[in-house]
Image 1: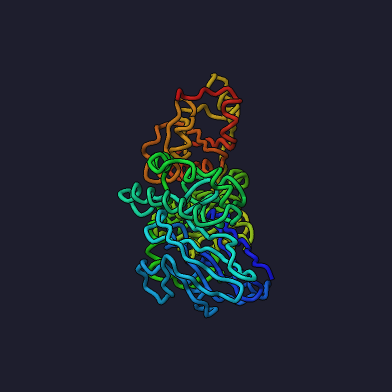
Image 2: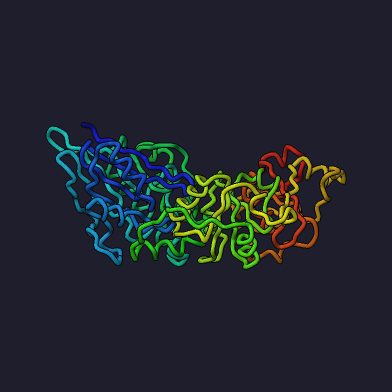
Length: 465
């Protein structure tokens, strides 16, 4: 049987894991912590997992590799140079691992994203020899980009960027143009220097499209470092957890909170998170809650915004949505929410006075307000707050806007000038989260739920470049 490689996507974190098999033996690469997905897929394929492989100690999620290897009895391949607190099969550049008569892995040292990063060439047996099918590149060579090099500290970023350039060149020289490239990052992950430019790729395509293979080392390093923006604060906990050895997950339902308990948790300064779509949140929500809908990267923003260890309570329309949020949160090391409640805002409030609405506008309404023609239902803006990331702000912003990136907002609420705040982002998701934080702090807020591209169309003036 021909080798089959199946993508196991975790779109909420922008990552991919893989199951590669010859129909009998299976290799799992960079598994997420919720390994039931992997076990189900292997069972569906009739494949026995014999090897679990880590390309690097991950910084953006808690790995499921250790637990998957324990449950399946598979060999657990981790870089020999990485110091870890568990038993593993140490591997290094040049090692060859025989998986079956038709399948093998070749280990290639590709430092850059981390110091001890490894890639794994997947070889298929032919009549007389072995043929490379593709390479699992982790955070090294991605689709149209590379993994960022500053996650181990800014002091290492330049050196690692040079190593990243050399590693990518090495892979391109080692493999034929037709070899598939299977990265872990690059699909929305902040581990990527920029975002994937294709759904799949080959070494040959990357030679044409990827700056790391088109630019000289110094130019690549300069451009790669210049393009980096902030990354989630919770990343500081992921590498420590993965090096020590993550514990198994518990995805069983958590305790249900009634209205009185929700009120008490909010009063105690805990985070009560409303997982419904932002339009539902704007229409009605429990006072003091924070909006982070499941339709967006909820776990990334929640993990970034909270003080690590703060108790979290989840509110959603259905138990299934709560369960989905639990699954997303264990991937970043938030193991058990403090409580949950499924239903509607009326059930979460002890009194109707505890319910709130958000005033919603769009960019044409902002343009009218700035021209002195504020729509009747809307208060005139005193402050226009832009909560996009710094790179987005630099690429273009509305003249006169105040910039506080969403991750900074909880600690910079005092930096938002007095008066009515109209808040926007790139699409409405982050602006709704920001609006909920501002309202919780007692501010008068108008949410601009609109695509930023419509700001120019509405006639708003952009700041000079």
